[in-house]
Length: 413
Image (cartoon, rainbow, N blue to C red; front, side, top):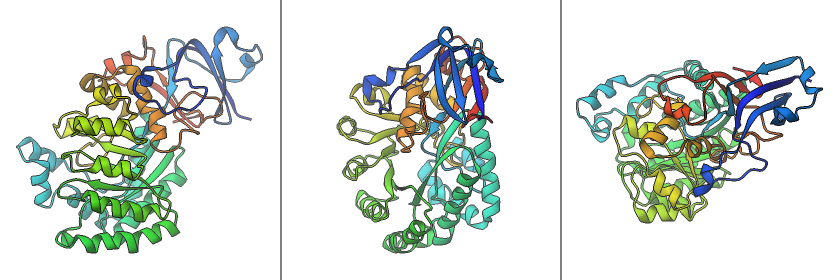
């Protein structure tokens, strides 16, 4: 049996004796033990508590980590990413600086269509190798669980290629990975005037094969002006739900067109983006079972208003934080930066942000029973920080890498 003992932990944060999706004021409840120990057995958290209560026999464990002055907390659970892509889009970054809008870039064949063109020209091995490097990068930054979407294939062959790459990532990686089918990301250029033909392809060609090969856990649609309407979103999601794929939706990024109401009607696990929300929509989301997943680095990169985190929390919503790591609107998977931006720009308290990026992120991927908190029986997915004064120092010192070690399933990254 592989046993590891972490001793003299300055603060062990994110302790939960039972799972609970945190809503509203509950988000600020981040239980901490000062001067703590934690024991890992075969990759699983088996015991923790105050150092003064540690069993003398535990101190004889050969594999020990002295975390004096350091914090230990759960790994980040990034519940919204697009890390399988073929190439970056820094040329569009320059276009944005020069004043072009997201819609203008998309209209000239840029945006998602640009990424789709490059992805369809890449081999499965090329996509896997590029995505694997990104996965290794984010794991070193503390991410222990991640959701990965398709959506850059925009064809039967391209979408299946992406999903098979994600399946291979799942098989090779120690991270907890969930897959989302996002064939309805936009329309391929050749079908921009024949939406129904592409929707039929998603429903009648892609979904049956995805179900047969068990290539996805969730289904997603980009519900937005110029993309998919609320009605089209509902049709596509219901088709996916027949195969057991639960909805996680892109809504209210640029416009309020009924995506919130559609997602709630479908009992979506999460409604993601939410840069543009009315007070009425905030109340509707707060009264629903859906988690509002906020993506502050996307708002930052696109110079859009940040999501109304405080209003959502104050109306008792359940919210999660995620990176939206993608080549067009959030080319970073650094969840530490996500948490810092949430505090600095969205006025979330550090404890709220950490909970939103751990246990609530796990709920947004339906993996709350295996990770997302310091709980006996869960995977030992742990961040060990460098010596710092408190959890508040993590978002405060936003430009510094404060991670000393990352353990995934008890194994050092």
